[in-house]
Image 1 (spheres, rainbow, N blue to C red):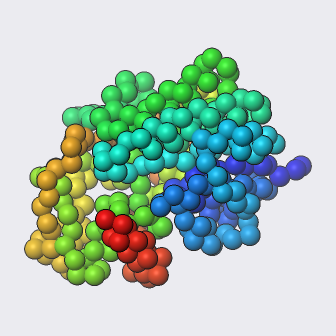
Image 2: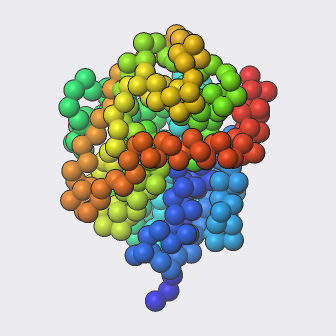
Length: 329
């Protein structure tokens, strides 16, 4: 039996690289024999150092999912295409939405068309719980209406609708996954956990938006990627699958836990003006995915402690990224 050929777009980013490391490293026994292609534009958050642990185990293509000619050459022959490529930082989308619409909407359409033209047997579009907006109580199921509130989430919702349209109109075998807030190693230090961890390591303050009452559902990147793999192996084309986390925490509670990890006090917290249109709470019901045999494995306390250790032990990875980001502002 020949090896499956897998194309991972956005495979040098935080979650995409985690998936590639797991896949190439043999974490998914059903896909023990694979040939992996990584396509990445290598924007500020794409980093080939994220893939160093599996160097030599994949083929890298430097490119953009909005490049139709490139995709027409690249996609044919792959058995599965997983789209992790996205602009994903809400604050950046508020300041400048254009790249978010380009990558997260036009990029998805360009990729879906390439997969349709190539007759790709299975496609997975990786998305976010933020497309639903905010929920005061309970949890969204997969049939909840989309009501995004940030340019980022609106662009992701647009991409999801494009993927769904290709499934319904053309019969493209694409499934969509939506997940909560991810954490883990190799996450770009603009996101809250690596930002707070690296600031606390260096004796800096940490910025807490508003009253800190915004609630997020946290999941370790390894659990997220395993959920994606379950969908890639056995999900129904045209369906949406939620990948819920293991800890629903307010930003205030998350801050408390991180302060405790470093023996720091609340004097290290700087209250800052709340983000525009800041969603109050996200929560997903993942019953559909659990019926396929999925359950998260990483307790938040263990995963957070391991993540803190990783940043403590890998200053050479994150410090240049933080310096580059600060120099650019």
